[in-house]
Length: 168
Image (cartoon, rainbow, N blue to C red; front, top):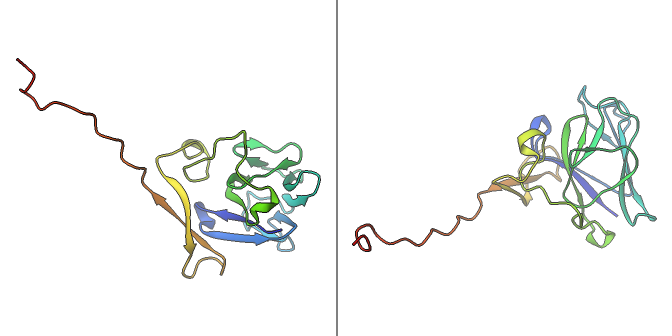
């Protein structure tokens, strides 16, 4: 199994971290995923494959600033789905299962966030959709991927009658 955490915004923008069956997340360099931010605890969380859940599960390791999925605090192990917004102490990532056969499709009971993963006004559906467009040139790692903002399709114009035609 392979999964990825991608940071689309902020100080770690375009950072793409690919991992296998399990990865510890934290500020210390001995973690599988080391995030050098004072908001992230030394040993913050763990993401691991669970046969029981038939997918990846995120667990907060009693971090100081919390772990969140779609803005909701992780209080017990939480199953992750592709394109879940995940936050470690306020550092925002998008989780993606790279092997879709691993049961990592979009969450069946959750609306997929279409704006940038973030907090506040960016946390809900936004006018832009975040889409993967391919490898970055010289990003944070060789696996870095660029997320491009695409404007939404223009709504159809209402049918109207030119002024003066039906104003009799």
